[in-house]
Length: 199
Image 1 (tube, rainbow, N blue to C red):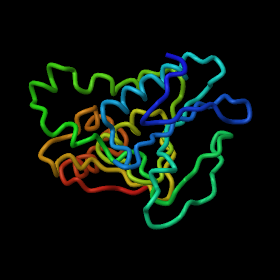
Image 2 (image 1 turned 135 degrees about the horizontal axis):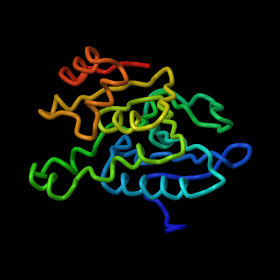
Image 3 (image 1 turned 90 degrees about the vertical axis):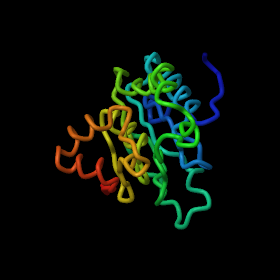
Image 4 (image 1 turned 135 degrees about the vertical axis):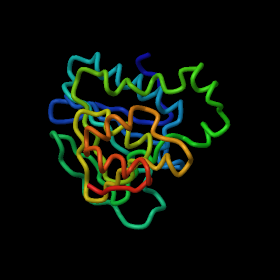
């Protein structure tokens, strides 16, 4: 659906040759929590950029507006792959899945409705995807970043799988991807304690 506006993200082509697709998560009131609507829009944006022959790579990042009202200020835009990307001091990439949206769902409802079925789109796109993280990437946000081909982490980036604090475990492949990314011991510590790591 070309031209369909997005509610939870922005998408543009940027760079000196307009060859980089930039997707900014834009749900600041919920620290970019990954609700079903945002994930559906992310899938649509990725499909559009993947089918665009002008786009050679895709960057996914948090939004400048997500920083509004937080302490600190914006650093100047950073140049990354010829793209100027804002790196706010506490910009959330994604603070995880939308717990409010999930809290009343039973296991049967999640399982029978393929609740997380669209989350794997990031890992199936054939163009390289870079996660530009300079804030919180927790739970589903950490899993989303790990689905990307490259993670570009700023000084303020924090990664974590705090699902254990809610009595559950990562549900979108986080246990497998985290083990490959940081090794078994650190992955076990992060998943079983909910502790965060910095870049």
